[in-house]
Image (cartoon, one colour):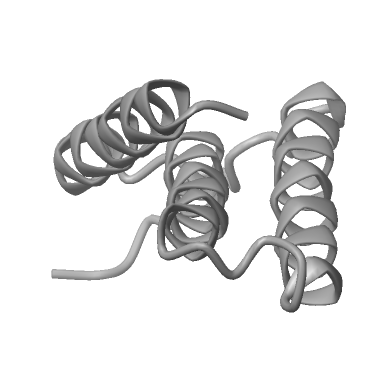
Length: 94
């Protein structure tokens, strides 16, 4: 993979990670948080490659990528689960 592609991947994945954390701070949605974490892991794996360690750290890159994809799968699965209805309001005496 060329250096330009690696640098572009770092910039884009880190940018998505930062944007997702800002979005999560506003909406507090697990989907947004998990996607941000996943792209953070992708950025780390691209950084490893950028430092020329792709061959010697191949296992680490694979682990980071698998964890990132697993985070995305978990986030999407959580969104697909039926939402629990909100508990009825309690009529507490004043």
